[in-house]
Amino acid sequence: MKETMGQIIRRLRKERNLTQEELAEQLGVTFQAVSKWENDTGMPDISQVVPIAHVFGVSTDVLFGTFGTNDTEEVRKIVNKAQALLSRPLTSESLFQKYLAVKEGLKLYPNNTILLMHCLETGLALSYPENDELYDSERAEDIYKECVRYANLVISYSKNVSDVMRAHMIMVMLHSAYGNSTEAFYHAGKFPNRADFNIHVMYAHYAHWQKDYITESESCQYAVVHYLEGMLRITTRLAKSYMLQEKYKDAAITAETSLELINCFFKDDKVVPPIHYRDRDDLYMLLAKIYIKDGNLDNAITYLEKMVDYDLNDYFTINSNTQTKSPLLRSFSRELYRKRVDRYQDLSVKLTDQCFESLRANERYQKLIDLIKK
Image (cartoon, rainbow, N blue to C red):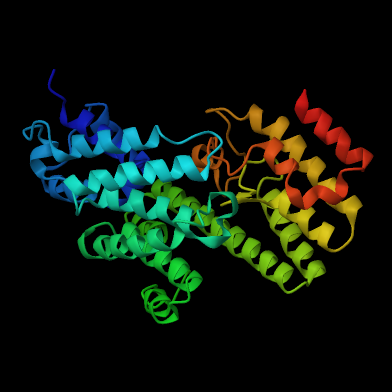
């Protein structure tokens, strides 16, 4: 049976891991409009067909269902097969197998930005030295060199600004790590001077003068959550920087302030969303590491207890209906409480990390080990 335009839009959106809200933001429409398209209770205006096609990186023929079996469908199959190679928990070897599978896809579709971005993200995980257990030391330098080529292709071909900026960001990270300071500085210079604006703030301005105050408030909330994520990301990095300088008290205060910030936003909620999982870190685990370095084993175990309590209890109470009471972020509940099945490590792996060797004889620590074995 032939797909309707709404079904095609829904499929393309999901293939690109976009929410209805994110697609709506890129097109300058409300997420309710996108929902109507996908449910076939409404159709995009003819003037929106080309922008929709551009967002998805397809021809308008694909949206009208006249393209038959096309490269988008084939690329989706390539990505799905590559994703199926990943293990849980994630390992360097399974990630490398995904990387190879996507590279094979690029032989058929060499400029496809979806495949290029998958190669870039996977390559970053494998070749960035601070990625701990995912870093592939034997292949890292070769992968880094390949990522440079992928990034240049994304920057040249992608019509998606977010993909282009992400490619620049990955280049800053990798060139810096591999000592190519000139290129790192070049890519860093491609970012805007100001960080107090984004697409959500612009849509809030637009909606205000349209007297669409519901959309204005939703756009403001989206902006708030991005600023919150940005603050947590940079404070976590600052805490690690203090650790490297052996300024352990400053590191602890910085990381604890990050947790306080989270708790301040969600002070009225029974369950705090799992945003203390920072990239490839857990703020509780980070604080335990800091206090071990500072020689305060009691505080280290206290944070490990908090980590175990959240992972074994609060995390498993989260479901698709969990929402925050905060009017600052209510519209973003679904994303905030998203179950992160690719959490950087399982609880047992986190708790038995080599850095906690000095706690082995501690009774409180042993109770935690026994608890996760049940």
